[in-house]
Length: 348
Image (cartoon, rainbow, N blue to C red; front, top):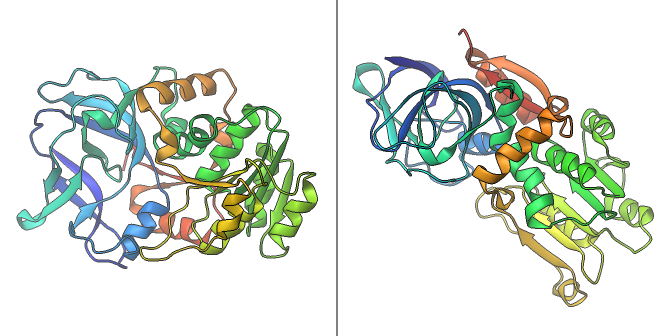
């Protein structure tokens, strides 16, 4: 059996669409027919070599998606054939299968790890899968693998945001927009969206932002202070992955209890500067690992919220490309104007 896959052979080179041979399933492995894959800046950083030396070239990419279980390997109990599933990089329960690889043309080994989603069929570790209800559409379900668990998870799990709070979100792409949806759902009184894209800011208003700030046109710190009565907001989330925005996000948190969450990724080796006296004033700066998500608990919850009309996942998706246009999709993300972009794996 074979699969089509987008493969990275060289840093800073386009992905190549190739036919790979699917290996026999081993203990804890599941073969999934991928329906849709999300893409995010993690993949861009891999392609650009910003995560440091890449020792696994050539390899597949992608770490969130949706699909249907085709078959299961020995010992798999969490899912069964024909189950609808979300694929996520965040470890849940189940077998943590050995690293997965495929054979390509002329016997070339293509590495894939425990999860990859830029494929039409993919061998996935059991603990990177979560079963979802049959009525959950696979199109929107793809967002439940990374964007929603990280963004909404920050609101619900990391900061446990209180109703009536104020929050500023720096960068309203996939993660930031997901946090915005959850902040609205959690009853935030002030939701400030900050970006340099007018298109993203306009979408943020539709998603529930109470205020928007274009960082290319305004002094962000002054604008935030002007919108709050306590000289800063209760919470800030940095999703843009830039030194400057991380530093401003920390400064924007109010004294005596304001919390800044860093969710964005900087290129390896870059550092930020903060004033230690801000810590003495009672501000906090924290990191997050996938929104402190428990996939087996949280992903089904988000699916139910969607099915009940509480979580507008469809509003997050702005573009969808077939697999043979994956490089165009990545360029769209790199330009910074798109919302969440999906890759459609159906009927290639």
